[in-house]
Length: 121
Image 1 (cartoon, rainbow, N blue to C red):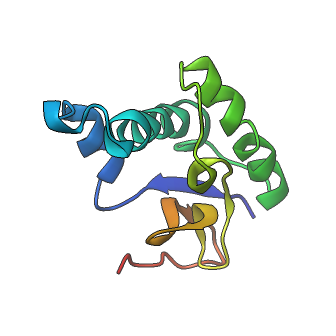
Image 2: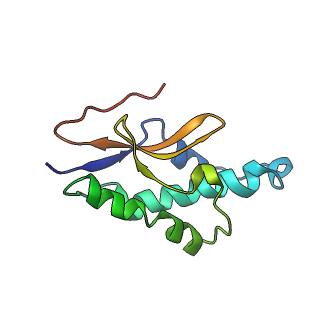
Image 3: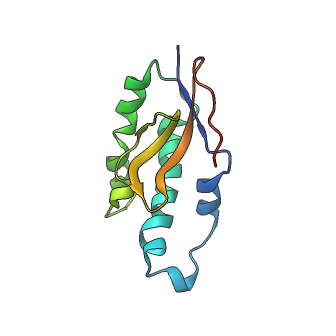
């Protein structure tokens, strides 16, 4: 069984990467943390995860564990606790598991022969 990861169907990170931060939000959590982190997550997913095959969840997790180093290399000086780690969730997604204000941030869908895609709420 191989594992693949797909982007979120709502294209959240692609949309964030296209938008400039509104001037009134530049010095807020959204401007300083959320938007830069979403852009870095998209880069990480595109470069390291989406479109690749992994032999099992352990192999995928080894790649997901490199997220903090990737973020730092992209110039993110600080990873908020809600975005600090990535792992495979029990819902069949790749998520930042620490519950932020809206719960775990699901960043991708895990696709295998045994798991079904989980729709977003």
